[in-house]
Amino acid sequence: MSATALSVYESHRRRGFDCLCGNMRMAARAVTALYDGYLAPSGLTAAELSVLWCVVAAQPVSMQRIAQFLAMEKSTVTRNVAHLRTRNLLRVAPGEDARMKQVSATRSGQEAFVRALPCWRAAQKAAAKALGEPHFKALVSGSLRLARAPKILT
Picture 1 (cartoon, one colour):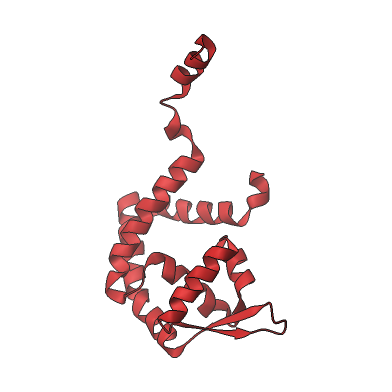
Picture 2 (cartoon, rainbow, N blue to C red):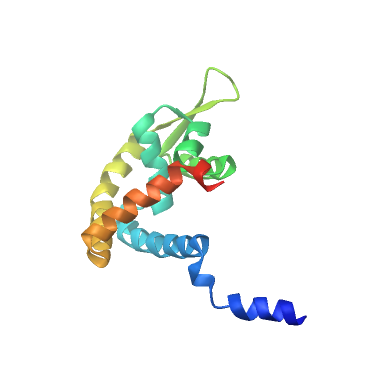
């Protein structure tokens, strides 16, 4: 390694915790684990609940709209919807355009959503207690602002 490269290496090797992306990814894994633990009795994971919630809120909703709303890759939405469909929580029907599939919750999906809500509320309460209510509220609104404003980041 050249002296310049070594200097750059030494000056930056411990700065990884200054990285927004790295810290957000670590935080996402920690928060997901917390919510998954609280949601376990409902039979849903945090990832499943987020997709189900989006569908319940806007049904019938296209796969494309789910991807936009959740800031998720279309292929990930397709996999997640397929998984929830095999569990009979979602149904997929053709839209006006054959390429646009419409997703809605089945009765079982609606019931699973209702069962998950007390678990989700408990997770919210635990996170708020751990972080302190003002910091929790700031993180919720700040993370949503980041997710909804990708153009500011490019």
